Image 1 (cartoon, rainbow, N blue to C red):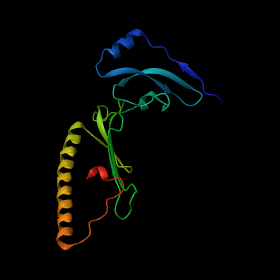
Image 2: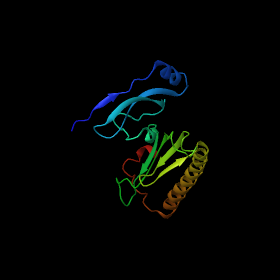
Image 3: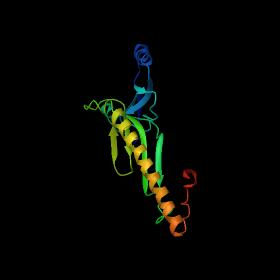
Image 4: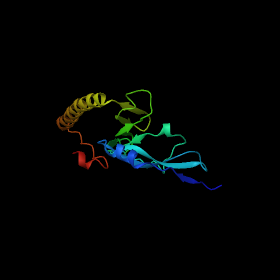
Length: 167
């Protein structure tokens, strides 16, 4: 069975309405089950990089918006060099039809490859402050380990592959 795609026309008044809202634009989207799909124009945040035609949904209420992965960090370990043991990414997210206003407003999605966490802007700001404090503690621990190794004559560990930019 071959998929059929119908075009749902949109009026110029709808286009002007969306284009008149700062931060939004019209984007093509596809909805329906295979063989029964239709294309439509939907309002989309300017930061959304989701292809709503290729990554289609069965129902319009399932449409959500994803920003690019603009923040990311990953690390390996001296016991498993080159392996991606820790990873975090952060991106903007919006689920406009979610009944929870925190999800139907722009929020920040954090992904550690196991769990997705969704944070309000305030939660993301607080987490950023806590990560800055954590980074300061991590730097202090690194200096303490380096000083101990220097005092005791231990060989410093070789640089982990891919970490050259962090030194």
